[in-house]
Amino acid sequence: MGKILGLAMASVILWAGPGLASTMQSIGKNQVNVRSKPNMTSEVMFQASLGYPIQIEKPRKNWVYVTDWQKHTGWVYKPLVSKTQTAVVLVEDANIRKGPSLRKPVVMQASKGEIYKVFGEQGKWVKVGYYLENEVIGWVRQDLVWGD
Picture 1 (spheres, helix red, strand yellow):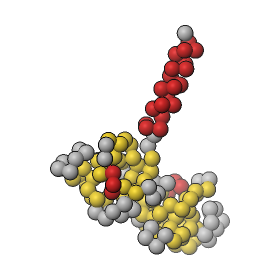
Picture 2 (cartoon, one colour):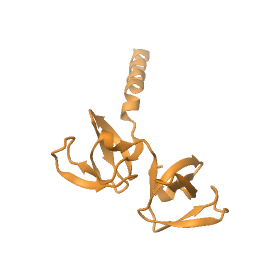
Picture 3 (cartoon, helix red, strand yellow):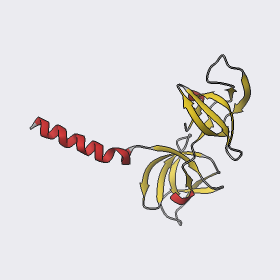
Picture 4 (cartoon, helix red, strand yellow):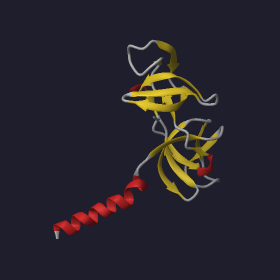
């Protein structure tokens, strides 16, 4: 009986797992409305700009329920979401370095709320750059950004 229950639970987890997992994406257009319900007439909770990182919590037909870096939630029309991964700076000043190490030189400082495109990850470091220009700047510590 225990084996059957275990197999049944495992198959439920495998079947439901991908649908339950949240994924990081970004807003794919400028000034996208994040709404209280999944329809075009519901209240606009806030607007998000191009590249704004979001965590997809659950899909519903042509809509996705999202959370942002400040724990704001709402519904976004799915065609306005991009699979491009971005990250927002969480601290007042974050050093962006030439490589994934505190020993590498600082190439620039990023400010709280700035958004960068994610180009990759290595250990506890995120390779970031400019979104529109598709240009790498350098590396930032993972704990200083949200969205990677």
